[in-house]
Structures are given as structure tokens and as C-alpha cells.
Length: 96
Image (cartoon, rainbow, N blue to C red; front, side, top):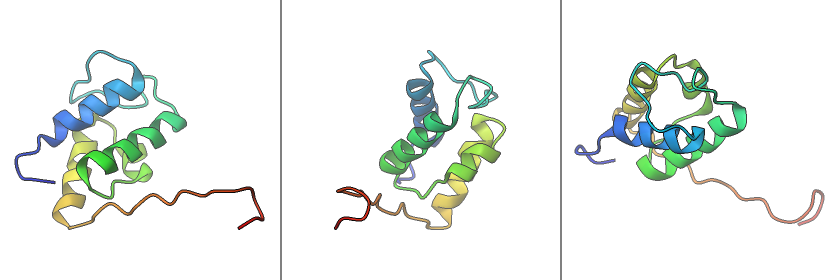
């Protein structure tokens, strides 16, 4: 993530896309806007890809507002927590 990245803007855009809303304000909450668990997982994965920061589902679920979540994302970025690659499983259970 570069210093010029508008983290709150990126997070707001992802939330708006995932939740199907036009706009997300800093005082809005993900779940208060109608978000549910599958959307939260999708948002976290999109943000990892776009920001390159190891944001977690727990970060999203414990943040009351967009501003709170953005602060958590910034803290992870400053701590140098890079996003881990997503492991994609192939095949059926029990097969290799």
C-alpha cells in the first residue's frame, strides 16, 4: 500500500460494491447497512487484494463503523502485515 492510497475511499468503495449501496459514510457500519457474513468474507478478500494488507474478518466484525475499520486497516499496514495469499483448494475432499 502506498502512502498516497486513500484507504478510507478504497474501503468505502468495496463496501458499497459488496453491499449494493450507493454510498458509505465514515459513520456507517457494515452490518448496519445490511451486510451479512458471506458479504463480509468477500469484502475482506477484495480489500486484501486491493490494499495488500492482511485485514481479517475479525477486524471487520469488531469495527462499529467504516472509520473504525479503516483505522484497523491502517494499523495493520503500518505494522507491516502483508496480505497472505489465498489458498485455493482443488478436487474433492479426500483426493489429491
